[in-house]
Image (tube, rainbow, N blue to C red; front, side):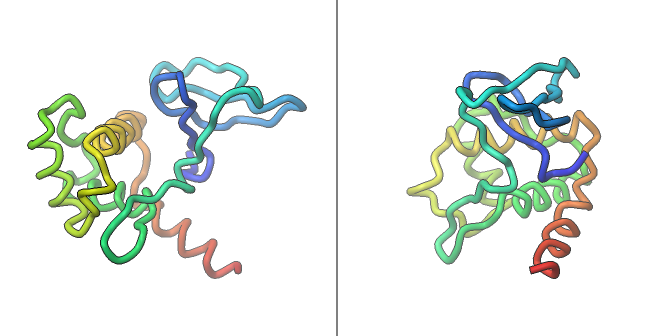
Length: 140
């Protein structure tokens, strides 16, 4: 499973892996229940590799945040995304100490932790995250 093929679809729970492309969209597999379904151009889709978290200095790619969480949790699941706002923000400040607390809302932190836990349950290899990023930088 490649990080570059993981997407979030608005209105649909969980994360999806892109399997193939069609004329009208893509075929995806849910990481929650392994069901396959088509995603058309009418759906709002976000590639996880294109998402970044605001910090006071520069935006940090979501892959780096996931890597930080994986290092902290040894690749296992982290805390629940249903924890209180105080618990979530203090946890997130351990993972990404200089995140911009004014622009990164608790709802964003919940989503990041929820997505991380979905990937952890799907046995995603977080060690490959920065390797993919480095290899794409070398190609440019």
